[in-house]
Length: 72
Image 1: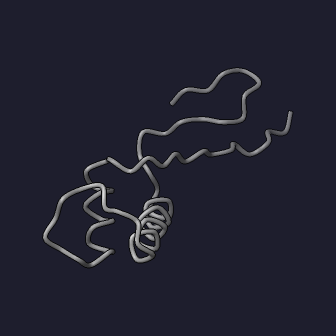
Image 2 (image 1 turned 90 degrees about the vertical axis):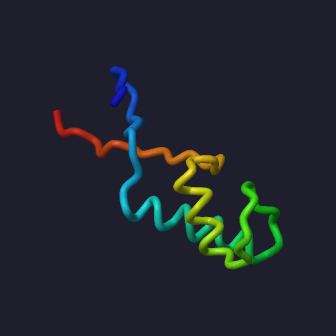
Image 3 (image 1 turned 90 degrees about the horizontal axis):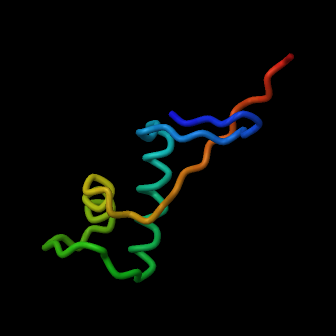
């Protein structure tokens, strides 16, 4: 986790279950609207393709988290 003084953004090595669900849901919607899949697969189910793309860590999605303000 990297946090610099005066900066309220930080990086975390993994995603929470809520973030992963949101990312997979957004990608599923993109696929169902006609976006090309980023992997070759025999499946035509958008949710399965989105899950495989997420598990392979090839989705170009960034999550930014904001730290709560500290009382000083």
